[in-house]
Image (tube, rainbow, N blue to C red; front, side, top):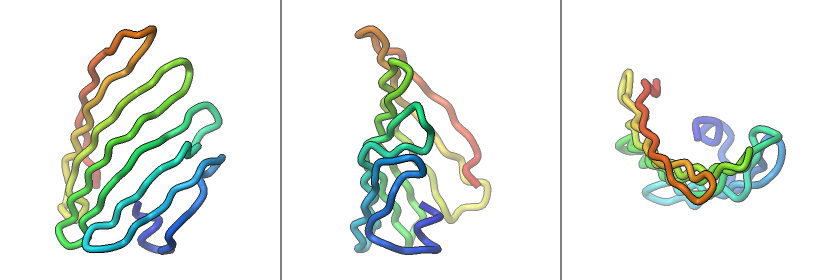
Length: 106
C-alpha cells in the first residue's frame, strides 16, 4: 500500500502475476486478485487504509504449497512503532490450524 501512495493508480500488477485495484474515497480499498509476489503462491482479498487515521485492515487468502491460509491484519500506519496484529488459520487436508502473531509494522 505504501508503494501505491507514491505512484497512485487505480490498478496494478503483482510482481509475478495477478492484479490489484484501488477504490478511492474517504477510505482507500485495495482488492487483490490472484496477486503473485512470489512464484509459488497467490493472494486474494481486500485491504482498507483510512489515510486520515492511518488505520489499516486486511482480509487475505494466501494459497501455495497445498495450503490455504486465511489472514486478518490490523495496524495504524501513521503511528510510530505501530504494532501489527495478524491472525488467521491455515487449512491443510481439511483441518484448520489457528495462526496468530504480532510485529512492529513501522
